[in-house]
Each structure stands twice: as C-alpha cells, then as structure tokens.
Image (cartoon, rainbow, N blue to C red; front, side, top):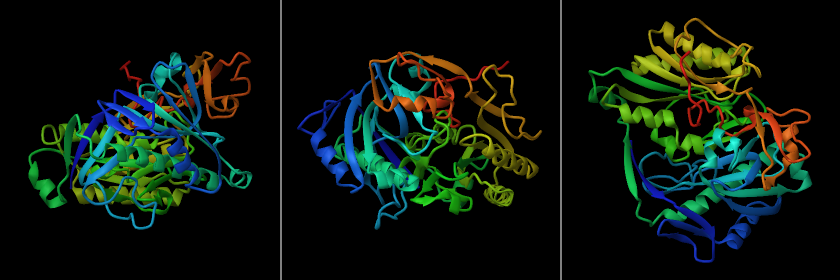
Length: 432
C-alpha cells in the first residue's frame, strides 16, 4: 500500500469571506462554519470559533481533542473512515493533502475530568506541541439532556471535531503542495523479500480502551471490541485511528498525533537502511486479566507470524495499561523478539514514587517520556477560551490549583501532550 502525502505549509490563518488557500494563507468563513456546525446535531446549543496563534496570550481549557485538517485527493475512502454510512472503504493509499501548521481544537463543558490545557505562550507552552500550531478553537455546548449523558456528549464533540477538520481540509484539495513524501508497505510476502538481509522490525501500537469513556476508534469501531490486528502504517495517516477518550491530557494521543505518529514516520525513514519495517500490530488496553492475556497472546502470535526480529511497543495512559505493556513485552521477548518500550512515568512530585504500576525484567530497554507528576506554575494569561474552573478538577489538578488572579499550580499531567508516549512532545530523555 502506497500513500503520497502532500504538505501545504500554512503561514497564516484568518477569518474572511473568500475561503481557500492563497499564497500560504488559509481563510475560512466564520459564519458559514458556525452554521455548518449547528446543523450537525440538534443537541448543539452554542458554538464559538476563535483562531489562536503561537505567542498569543491565550489559554485553552479543557481540551477534548486536537485534529489536523486533511483531505483525500486520490485513492479509496475519506479522512476518518467508518463513522458515516457509505464511508467504510479502506484508506492509506493514493494521495492525501495536509494543511500543515493548522489544527482544530475542541473544547466546552467537556464530559470527562481527564481533559487538558493548551497555553499558547509562557512556561506551559513549552510542554505542549500544540502551542506551535495555528489553532481553530471550536467551543461547543450542548443541551441539558445531552450534557447529562456523557456518552452522547462525547459523541457530539467527536463528531464536530472530525467534521470541522474535514470541512477545512477540503480547502486544500486543489492546492499544489509545497512538498510531498511517499510512504509504502508492500503485501507481506513482497515486503519480506524486499530487504531480506535486514532485521525485520514491527510496531505494536497499544490503543487506549481501558474503561468507560476511554475509547479509541479504528474505522469507527471502538477498539474495546476488537482483537489485535494488522494495519498498514499509512492507514493512520488518513485518520483510520481517532481519539475519543478521557485519559490524562499529558499522555493522551489526540487524533492529530495518530495522524502524525512519530514512531511510524521514523520507522519509515530508516526502512531499507537499518531494518525492514514490516508493519503495525494494533491492540487494545484491557480491564480484566483474561482480556489482557488474550490480547497479549494474539499480539505475540501475529508478531511471530510476521517473522519479526524486534518490535517497538507504545502505550497510552498509565496504571492499568502498564500491565498490558509488560505482558506484551514479556511474551514477545519469550518468543525471541527484542523489544523497546515507550512510556511515561508517574513518579510523584519529587520523583520518589514507583514510576510504573507494573514491571518485568524483560523490560530492559525502555524510553521514558517524562514524569507526569512534575508541578508547574502557569501564569495568568489575557484570555481563557473554555472554562478555567476545570483546573481544580482535571487530572493533574487539585483543590486550589486555580488561584484568584487566574494563575494555576498544576501537574504537567494536565497539559495536552506534555509526556506523549508516542514521543510527539518537547521533553527529552537524558541518560543518568
């Protein structure tokens, strides 16, 4: 499967009546988009749109999701397949255009307490990659009946975020990209022959699914209901994996991160040079021991079936998923497949606590993406889009986090993407 990705680099983003991309400036009609959003669902009662840019004295909270506008230019399917009837075609091949430098950020009275903060300036901005994007912030409020049903509320926000990203992405369909990049994974027999002399490497992509509202979707299917399966890496670039969960903001993978997986892109860069990147195994993170055993057994079966020599394993979240991470590691190592794990740590404010909820001697190659419990002081900013009182409620916050002057004392756990377990963040691991 081969996908050509065309990157349209956006230098400025604004509201205006003449929509499109002209000389790297993206313009959208605010009133038209508001009406479009209101028409998506009768339960929506209020819509507010803002464009914020790097350096603006703006805080966005609580953040539900971050999504990159993309559009299919050639090939099967559409961006974010599987959610709408008639859009079940497989993606990951053909041509896709990306409006690079732009993101859609959803907020409002969000259903879960594990949502996030994006500061566009100040010390908090250094911890989130989304302080560097030009963000269309979509604040959506719903009626009281929907607000009282967490599943419906989350579904509305997810629907809006995806629809807006697709709406904007269409503006790049007929634009000539500034640069393009091709990604290709062959059918397995051909892939194994292509670089037969190189080590065969795969990626075990653990997706959050550990409980109520901890949902990730693959072609519109909640991954709690799937068993581990093979995926062409390029499928992720077309939105086959989307976020709908409420794990802590620091290590939650927003849809934007799935679209731009640094692990997949780095594996492609070194494919044919250092190793043969065979493919991706997606798997879920389970609640019961029996489900954990089943999924990790199937991951190992697929890895052996692929003939892997080594695998990278990443997780999403912490605590309960640490057990899935260690099971996958242990069983792959027992099968003779070398592993490298990507995770973050919850080691306490002073770093004095056990970093992971589970461990095993087989996990002897682990990349840490930071301590989520680290405390940070966020100064008052000129404007808050959303609802600042969530600072005392979201994961990483505590009673008294929000001060009267508008500043916040909080763990970096509350900052969107601060300790991304896919490595899509700004922290660096330093060997001790």
